Image (tube, rainbow, N blue to C red):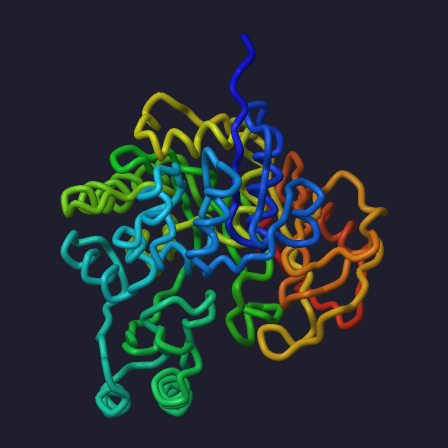
Length: 424
């Protein structure tokens, strides 16, 4: 008797979604794979539909018109807007947390208050709802410090300030100039933590979790971790500093307490819980929680997982994650982001991309691309993610950069130090 084949829709159109679509395309239980809006690279694996990820009503209509069996909601905005809730109400299974559970990411104030209640180590912070109070507090602060917009800001709402002048500008940009829109209705002024940064993502079904390999995202635009924060310029995985004992400590003292508390509050977390951590001298501290797969961490981590991704996503929705174990590769991974010059500020689009046919033994995930007449063109700030795997981290890094050198487009920009200094 032949096995039923499912129709699956992936919401989103970045490099993370390309990685998820690529993994899902290998599942033998999926008959049709769709993406909305998708991108140039995704269009080679799935049927793309030009609907914005934040157009909730049209996304629901699309899922219904396609008779979808399952929808994977990956970006932060549609999760916060309740797309999973809307799909579930229509009887469509959807991967991702409810809007209430997604507050772990959509409200840094909610997450901070939850961590304080649970005594989870995190930076001390003061919360301000108007710029006057925030500005007047600066003469009592120690520097450097961190200023965060409360809401979603595409990974760019965190500003490290070295002095009162830069902090004053950050507050003014966020709260007066509305640089991040309503995400800046409230801000947090936090102590500055030091130590290696680590990301740990885990599958969650509301009660149980499975941790993915650790990773490290390089957020700053400039080499040596200088310049503005971006959505991420490159990743290594797993992180050399993350021992099995340390990972288990993080699971037991941070991730599991959060999962239990969310369930106890009647807002069980189902999906991917992402913990951004700082390995301080006092132990692991939480910098932030995200409520979805990280980008570009996913492009580094998913190639290290040998499980059928679709099976794991369904287990999170169905509440039977405890029946599964992750099959994790012994290899290491390096991802280098190729971006449009000027990103994260103004940049040009429409540049033809060359060299994609010449890369070997890596996978190039598309983030900001469109495909026209069998050619690819840039359409965003982060354009491509070159993902390499090898027996050691140093080999993966070298392999990634060897292939990056083969690809080009006008005003291409990338960091040349991803993973450097963290090699075995």
